[in-house]
Image (cartoon, rainbow, N blue to C red; front, side):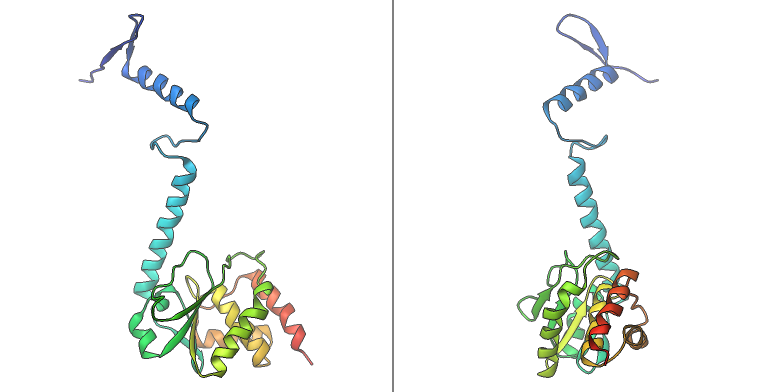
Length: 210
């Protein structure tokens, strides 16, 4: 049998728990301009940010379990997911010295052991990929030319990091964008830049066509 607790107001009126709680929540909302969720005494913005962080942590764990081997695109030049970037055994085995992370929100796993460079790229078709290429490709080429091995990665090793690797092949190996994509996919089948990145890479290749 359902019971209802009674609560007296200061005028002697009686409210059941439901109305009492409703009035209490209304008072709280008046005191604070922040938006609160129905079930948590926590701002919606904070909950959303916590959810994003949780989803990123989940993705990272998945890639650490299922996609942790770097793919060698050129001698000493590797492409992979965040799982590969966290695979200490593979990094040591392949003698990788430099790690280029092409995503915001991924903390370096071993900052005391490897040199990191981070590009805060969003995996969206409207992201301006070209603005990063001049400095980034010079950096990559300097390391590769000195026989210093490098891993390029994002979360999935599919779009952002693959696009950087493709741009390197365009500039330094005289490949067209689509030709470079096929070359990379032969080494790493998961590679699949978003449509906007591929359009930009096709524009980028025009600088190097004779």
